[in-house]
Image (cartoon, rainbow, N blue to C red; front, side, top):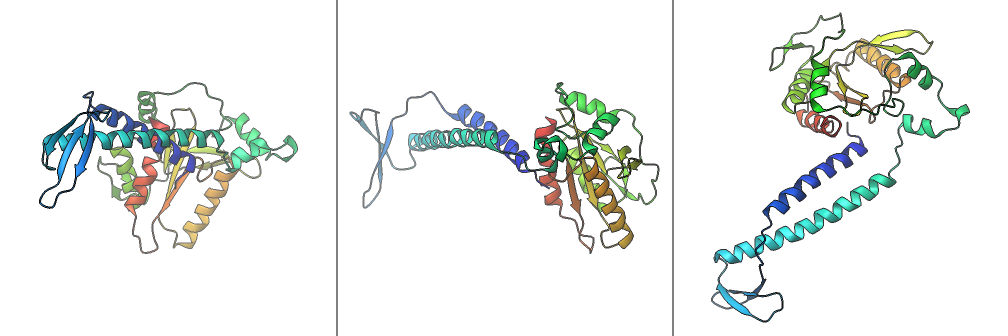
Length: 284
């Protein structure tokens, strides 16, 4: 699912790309203004200089310079809109306040804060984005190397019967699509990685998110694909896992993506694609 802040970063990245592309197509040629004179038989186009002193007849719309002037004028206007939108987004990003539980908890007086946040930080387990003070910015190559290192996996590998494009075996069709989509976008991840999390009674409980990501900022992101919500036992286990995540500041819209199949087993691959693209600003 989308995080609005991620949407802002993704939109800013898209606008910066379009600005660079538009500037590369703008030519240094000093084009004049285009004037259209409507005629009964055929419209006529004229080019005049910027001081509106000299006019030259170009002809009809098929004249190559007419199309070139129109294109350059369009690019100039587009560049103006893109730069204006970029300023608006940067202004909004400065004013935007996060409303997720982790961010709100950090603003509360000490007496009102959830106590497990500091316990998790001290335990060396999963740290939320706001709690892990990591100054290092990882490169994309660092993240690829992290994903390739050996790690402790889920020991219960039964029910894996679906094959991905690179031959890995996963549990559901939804996981196949998520797996292959992440591979297509070049997003490094670990599948079924084992985590030790803090439980409600201060005991340690293990959980294996379907997909784990290390972000370029040094904190972790997770993805759960729920495949059998029509099963009572599966729903019970999934709700328990979500509660465990919540107690460790792993929250949907903050550092957790949740996708699911419908009761009849159908999967919306376009939703998975959008969710995967929302991770790109955190990876590259």
